Image (cartoon, rainbow, N blue to C red; front, side):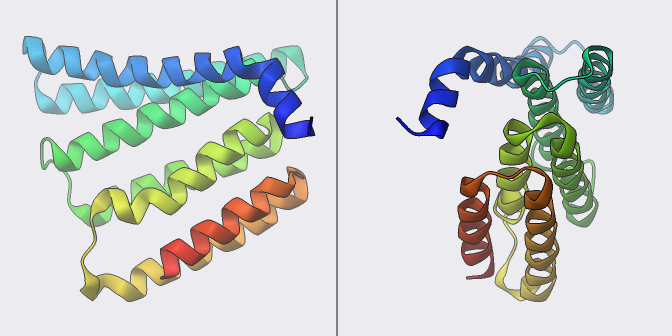
Length: 185
C-alpha cells in the first residue's frame, strides 16, 4: 500500500468532513434562495463572511494547536469551496459582478488557498491547485480571451511549483502538469 493510499484510508472521514463543510455553505445559500429570505447582495455578503470566518477559524485552530491537523486543513478547504461557490453565484446566478472581477476574486481564493497550504498541508494544496486551474472553465471564457488565460495559467503553474517546495508530495507535480497542459491547451 502506497503512502497516499494509507493516508487516504486513515483520513477519509476528515476529507469527508471538509467536503461536508463546503457543501453546507452551498446548501445554506440555496436554502436562503428558495425561501426568499434575503436579497442577492445580502446572500453574497453573508456567504463571503461565512467563508472568511471558516478560514479565520481554521487559522486560529492551527495556531492554537501549533501543529498540522488534517481536520483543520479540511476546514480551511471547506472555506475555500464556500468562497468559490459564493463568488461564482454572484456572477452566474445574480449577475452582480463583472466577469473580470469574478476572475480576479477566484484567482485570489486559489492563490490564498495555495499559500495557506504551506501551513495546512496537502489537503489545501489539492483544493487550491485544482480550483485555480478550473477557474477559466467555471467562468466559461471565450476563445478571444486566450492571452489573459495563458498568463493566468503561467502564474498558477509558477505558484504551484513554488508551493511544491513546501508541500512535498509527488502527486502535486502531476496535478500541476495536468492543469498546465489542460489550461494551456
